[in-house]
Image (cartoon, rainbow over all chains, first blue to last red; front, side, top):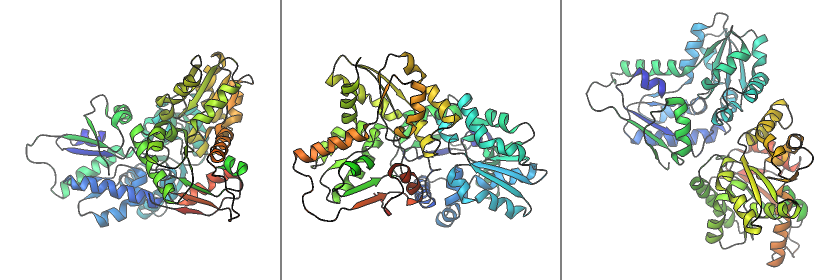
Length: 247
Length: 247
């Protein structure tokens, strides 16, 4: 959302965080699909012109089904990261880290190989990264020990590009960088997603042309308190009022 | 459930794990109450004679409301741990660790002081302990570093008893013991809860007297796969078939 807001400042945004039921990364494909569908139904009712499924886990498990079900343009966060990784990788040996659910879906390997069948992919689930970010331990000895345990393998692995396949992970970039070294490019798909959304809206002639007020609406499914603190880490201090909804 | 099964082998048990929506420890009081009520409604419909709310977070936030709402004997896991801690503490300076939601409810301090108003309580949330247990990192350098960061304070604090106020924490006992030292007693409320349940059933003449078959039924709200692996850590290898339900 921060990246989209920067790139498309003239567009109104409706954000929904399913905070009562997160994290999705430890749930089964079936439950992820059901919850994601409920979220999209909520957004579709608010008359949005496009939906970004801004979660790798939800994109990995729900995307084909959702595009079939909803008759508005939908975007996931997997494709833009995949394309960007293939653009910058020289040896086409790409690493992917994500939640348990994203990695077990194998979606990144499938999509990477669909675009370049010679791509070699090394995937790894890092279940403790999300709780570490939620705890706000972005750079301490614990976070370093966790990152070492998960990521040291990528140093010897021959990977030249590592996809951060979870929207929380970019906040851990300094520690991840320290463990994997300077030679591996890190792919944070936020910018790529914002660019792809702009392309999509442009192609479908959906970019805003009137001069109606630009609005940012934030909704969550649990009480807003905890969310507001975490939102500040992503959006900076200027977080609009957050409303609670039941799906 | 393992402790109850050991103490009351003649009783049939119905277990419900709300795996689609865990962890509860990061949710608001309001959401915890709503979800716990749905769980109890499910169990009450299955004609159980008593319900144990076997989660500190749910007990902390939902207990008075649930006893008011359901007309069958209900037990939480806070009271038995509180009583046991007061029995074994000599200096009445007691430490409590738990999830964010349990600690912010301040339920342990309230209940401890209700029974002995001179009790001094030091409470601390340890949000990474549940994800560590779920990752099965029970004794490695990461778990040690996390435990040190959270618990070193208890060494100097004068606490002689530490309540493990979350059902996951007993699996981390060796690491917790290592950090807090040998002089602090650790209170794991599982045995205390099983004993309190036996007392309750005895007093209300609810102990099983017929010779109907003893049954153990396991239900979860997400697909059973992941749950079965974690259940083995608590129950041993002999986990009965797990069924999925929607609440």
